[in-house]
Length: 284
Image (cartoon, rainbow, N blue to C red; front, side, top):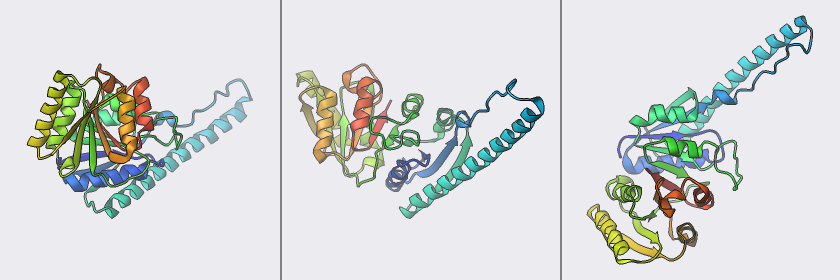
């Protein structure tokens, strides 16, 4: 990679994991880390319409007070944002990364991704954000919006960092899954990691050939990859493999028409990402 890693932190419980994963990626690839904290203007407390409810003089005075409160809130939000960025930078530097830049933006988070991702090689986000907290039933409110908007690989950090040694590629022969295979084969992020390519369904000759082609691509990139055909529905079969404790990172295509790819964004997706206990790299 050796380019720029764009990491989004919001002060949620997942932000620490984002920092540790960003540091892991940066150490392996030589990438510079750009940390972003976005102050969304839509989350600024709105003013109530007091027209007609109280006398003019009192209303004018109250509006002045509300205006002062809005200004104070904006200053506090800026200060909090800078503090979150400084803490995040300190965590990444403590993990052995020197090149860390912080950016505080007043904007919609998706607009920020769209504006800044062109210079980035990968985007790192938390599975859940500040609003979702630790609620296992919810993904972050901006998660799907960011994944849909981004044209770069998105690394979705799980709740806590742990060493990554074993990678599972969810493969169905579609364009995005083939891109995932090529990405793992070429990018230094995956150098030296154990790679398994797995699909689910009937083990037809055509499917076996596609898997062998995927393995050949990975071998050309220096990986001795294992291939597997799992029984059952893709979302369940892959989830069981992850839950079996033999996978540290899941790589998969983010979009498409097959059951494996559509599960990432949609009714099954959301379920897969929600329940997955390991980080996920999503490819478009």
